[in-house]
Length: 146
Image 1: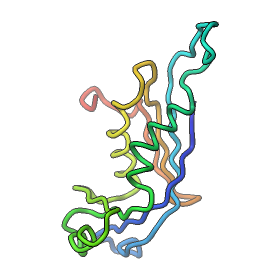
Image 2 (image 1 turned 90 degrees about the vertical axis):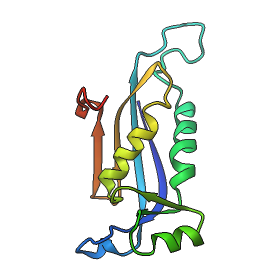
Image 3 (image 1 turned 60 degrees about the vertical axis):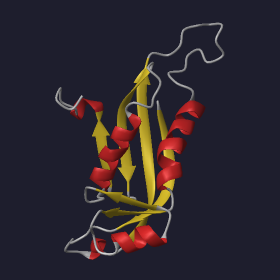
Image 4 (image 1 turned 90 degrees about the horizontal axis):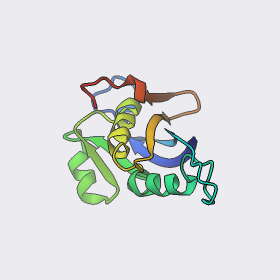
């Protein structure tokens, strides 16, 4: 099952040789797909569900949306990162360049241990624009990554 989430955020790619070096914003779209075995308990009103969409919504809200919506994402040590962090509350500083790909992998790390044991994180897709996105699939993991 897959659920879509939307949030607004800004970032800057420190040292980048194009326009993305400037602080700019995106209307991010995050697709979260989980897999599992649908409930077969006929006495359970959630029979047939892999997971209640409402539970998935709450997990993503608490761990991703509440933290990253309307924030500025910067690499630690980048120009203005200290000044911005000291002046504004909604700033995330990373040890990595906040590209779509790196942010997506960061979300995987946040989510992989926060889902119910009955489901597995199958894939994430993070779109920065209508035509630009990054995807992660569980099958991309190696034994060393798990």
